[in-house]
View (tube, rainbow, N blue to C red):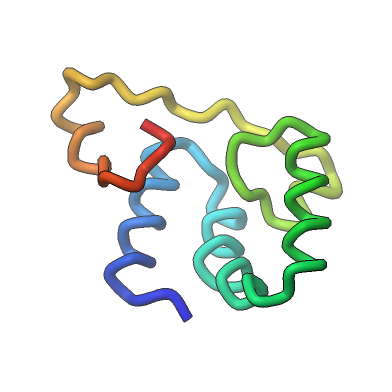
Length: 91
């Protein structure tokens, strides 16, 4: 299970990045629960890559083709810098 501090970070970062609420919820709950099931994760990653997502969409958005343009962070923006972490590949 995702630690509360990490969940809060991913929720805030996802909102800042313009990711739909339903996809953020899926990412911080279900996605972390299935990480041990390699077949499920590999299949889902294959779908994400095939349809050119830059984030982990929820199954409904993936199935309906709902895709948003993610916010591109500005390194000079104080608002963007507060969401950066050494492991954040989004910014």
